[in-house]
Length: 435
Image 1 (cartoon, rainbow, N blue to C red):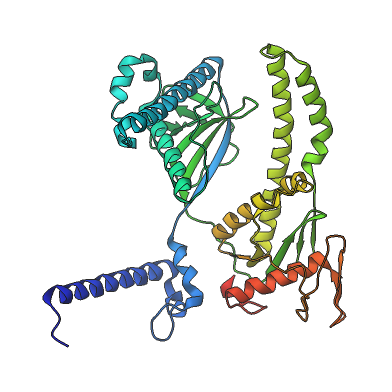
Image 2 (image 1 turned 90 degrees about the vertical axis):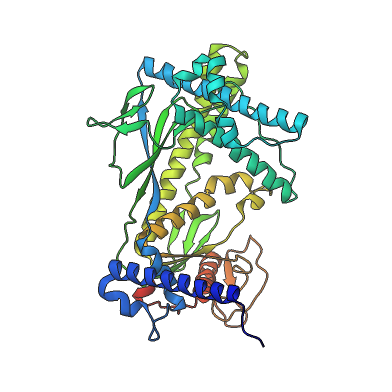
């Protein structure tokens, strides 16, 4: 083999030098954040062990949202609604421009290209000047994201619908992506072009505020959401482990035999919802009375949503506080609701929201959150791994091999825990370092 060319030699030297710099930065980062823990995080040869890779995330900040209710005055309410209407008009205009340019000229408009047309649009429509400039720029970003999502689904072989035009009252939020907002000394939120709006500041904001989004709910309530970059609040390490099996009879069954009852919030509101919908159907279309009755229906749905969200937040917080390793099923809820007999009950249980809250809280607290395949977790024996069919009507698992008699949900939770620990190479009793 001949001597390597100068280009290859230079490239190899550059790659080695880059790798050395990255390793040095990682060493300095871990040394500054962990102090004396640096020798224990590295192996004897100075390399990172495979089971300690997540320790590198301790230096990283997280993005967290803080939502507050706001109470605008009548004048501020008119300004907020005018802002939404101008953003809705601009959204439809930009979407129409993209569609026309592609159909007539075969070219695609970019986000920055459309933002460059704003000075001309403001001359044609002077009412756009009442909206903050960055709010208008964010509208072009939303159109661009909608088009990218559309083409992504097309390339994936799906049959997506084209991004829709927004009808009157169908545009419910706007965003200040960088500036134009602040929290005043008297806990009001100051919004550019709108004013200082009264805010229920029920908890302090942590970290540095990056963006602010103003949202109108279906019941005409107004909220502001701050996206903040802050340091994660780590909990004390613990070696406790848990597997969680979700269901409909009980909301969740833990591997330690604890059960969380299914509250069935939507079922509790069905009677009030049916009454409100009957009154809505009797009202004549286009009348103020029908608008009021539509708001009553939305309030019933909102009440069930609030209860469900509060329940999932509380239960996920309790689990993250108690356990260091959390194993759950990787369920595809969108496919499960195709069963028309169980669709309403599955949607009411809110498994996806529960798992999402668990994942976010576990990541901030420094816990391990593991998803496993749900296949055969209800059919396998948690003691001897014998497999047998288990119809939904059978609530007790009777193993003919080891004579184990156990509740089927508890048996599934034990299998989920074992699968989760096996997938990451942890023993059944994990040391505190892995928590």
